Length: 220
Image (cartoon, rainbow, N blue to C red; front, side, top):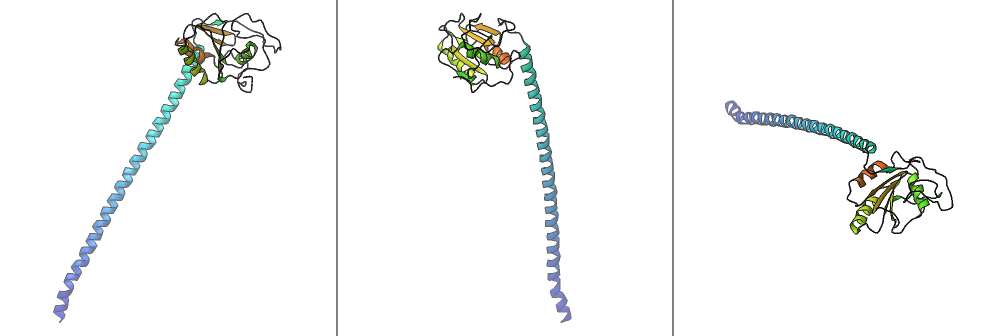
């Protein structure tokens, strides 16, 4: 009896040992997976951090470069630009006889023209437009020699540029005239590269007499 009992316990003991071995193997495999996953997560996190740093560095460098480009454009000379020196800035109610056409400064109406990308399809009052120039706006004018393509190109430019306005000016000498305070440029076509240069330099540029002054709540 005793001998038979010992023999019957051996298979059971072997099964227990096998289960323990299997459990140990599974735990070891799980631990290896955990370590591997932690390594992968750490590497991924490191890559993300490096990527974020690189992206941030690139953004800062790009912003710095854009700032330098704007400063260079603001200081660059534009061929053909005329300037008119110091001009008076009194508010008046009567019409003003300006020495240049279109006018780019001098006495003007107390109420400016709305100039946050406004495109007017009719001539506007000189005295109100000049007040907008005092606030740092660029005023685009054109006569009957401007083509529909010119007008469309300039209209799109103005509509996308705060502190700018546009209107027809039948009596002006040039096909297209770009006007800022005490500053003027005549071009024959909207495709002239000096158009963009003028906007870059003079929209809220150094010539602005009242930086930051409103270009809304004026006169339509």
